Image (cartoon, rainbow, N blue to C red):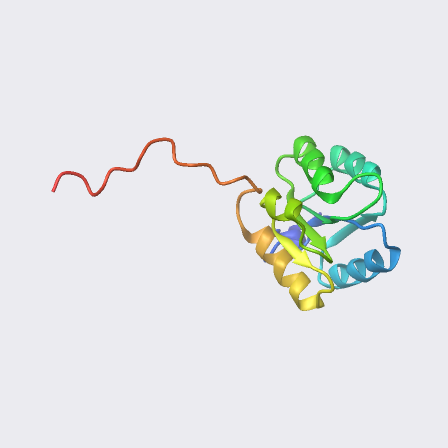
Amino acid sequence: MGPMTEPNDGGKGATILVVDDEAEVRALIREVLTLNGYTVIDTGDPVEARRIAERQPIQLLLTDVVMPIMNGIELAQRVEAASPTTKVLLMSGYSTAAVKGSGRPLLSKPFRTGDLLAAIRQMLDSRSAFRRPVPPTSPRPGFGPV
């Protein structure tokens, strides 16, 4: 691996796990991401996706929400449990209450390749993995004694 794979330019060289039960969608995403310097692993099987995430470092999970066997939100939770540093970007043709409730970023299908790349870049640039916003532990005082 030499200095060619510095992961700080919008996450170039990052490994992205793409999960969608539609093979054409996966093929299109894989082509776009590969052309843009990402390493792509793709599968239509969420169970296989979780195994992959347990075996090797994945920087980003890009998953469809509505799939047979296991939905994308459930998969995201399992991947995050196995690999806490993996970021998650959901894709869906419909914005369901479950998606909104998950608090995770959602890319609406159909999307333009530019939207996909921008969303991924933004996810990989943000320093920390997805965490639900936590209320501050103590109430912040004002500006101190006036």
